[in-house]
Length: 304
Image (cartoon, rainbow, N blue to C red; front, side, top):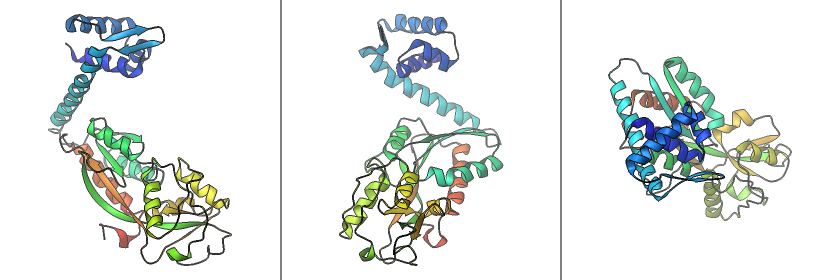
């Protein structure tokens, strides 16, 4: 059983097609097919059902797939571990980040990191928190920048800071010029929120429930900029992270701080504690924490 055979096997399992897998692995399809056949001969049974619409793993293939992915992850960790003997921070780092953080900090984070560590290749996966936690647990990414994460996950969480959320109102709203609002003053209007798969939506619902406000998700969205655009159009109000305000100001929406019991969300970095932490991952974490901290008011940093 050869490592390259396992790589080809995983690629075919994921793509469900020999041609696409061969293209992704940058190898001729006949060569890839031959290696899969050799692997099946060594295993002693078929690993794929060849169907007219594509291929799908057999029961033996599904069982092997779990071990093949772990083997390839362990080999990647071993290579990173060996690379640590080099003096320079080099290699690669794969980072997950949620959609309510990525648009507002990713560009300055990547720019700062590239300036300090130009030899490191950064790969970015933008997804919701639950998906990023699974990717960390499966060894598919090195780090994840999130707000909250589900309890019971096997990842290590480090709190970077707490970020305030502001009330978002149309610029023409009667409360838009106020310097500060209380929960009791929030208008009885629909709360426009992201789809419930986003942790920010669930957080807003909890905060509203705590203060006796019925949060409506009549117009769920998948991007925070869409929510802000709908607020600007007079479709309702919302709560918006402070880091979004500089980028969204001037687009028809006013952002007003809440006074007592102002809502905050956590900004956390997650990693898998059983995986080797490379110099590149450690360096990215340091740069990202400093850069993201500059996007949040000073009084809310360091978890205070």
